[in-house]
View 1 (cartoon, rainbow, N blue to C red):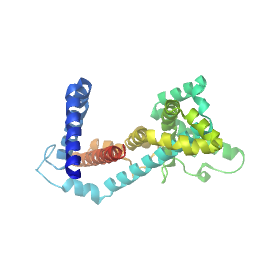
View 2: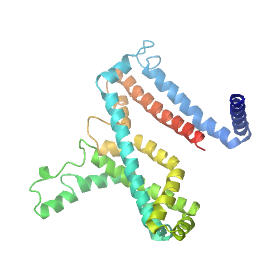
View 3: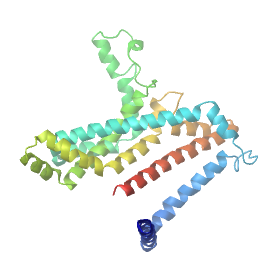
View 4: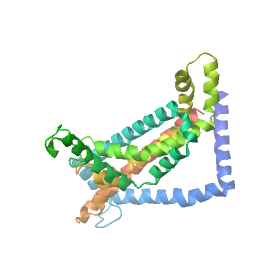
Length: 298
């Protein structure tokens, strides 16, 4: 009986979702102008990577996938992109949440909001160039160290850009992601009325920091999961920053895909579609897992 009720509830929810889609013109336009082009791009890149279509196509083959796996370019791009995006999301979210918890009154400061908006409006290429001028061997930080006698030449300064650990990329992407997360969490603090909840917790005997970490922080994380996922996906597909601050090998998805598609050897072009297909599969899998998890915990 319970199984029948579960199946009937699932059918009812799916039917209501379909009726809502057809009844709402906004959702229909979203599917027409967003979902259909995405599916077409996914189909085209998959077919190109499998040799079904494209230049010098000889029919269905896994040759291009094997070539991408043989030289470790695909595995390197996947590993580096996931690691950088995860690290940037965690660091930016941690700094933003700590800032909000320490002083949530920042949301009432017009100058602070203006600085955040200015940071959001700064192009990523400008941020990457600024980081390069600050952290490179001949940058500002290295010159300060040389002035105090801590180093004698640029070669003695730690390599923080175009480095093995992608420190320059992470710093630049964190600087670009923090204004968005700060604005979001500050507005979310007001939306959930965290001040009143913290005051209530303090009246029951909790300290100010305990009230903010035990009451406000879980609510901010619960409501902010979608934004954190969005920031992760945005950093996963970033292009300008890893292009300017990254190494030649390994490279992130977007940089390696662009270079494989623009290379003079046209036989290498299908490998760019291998990377594009892999990126699409990773993003869609992440979204599907998140939506299913969210539906189960609502």
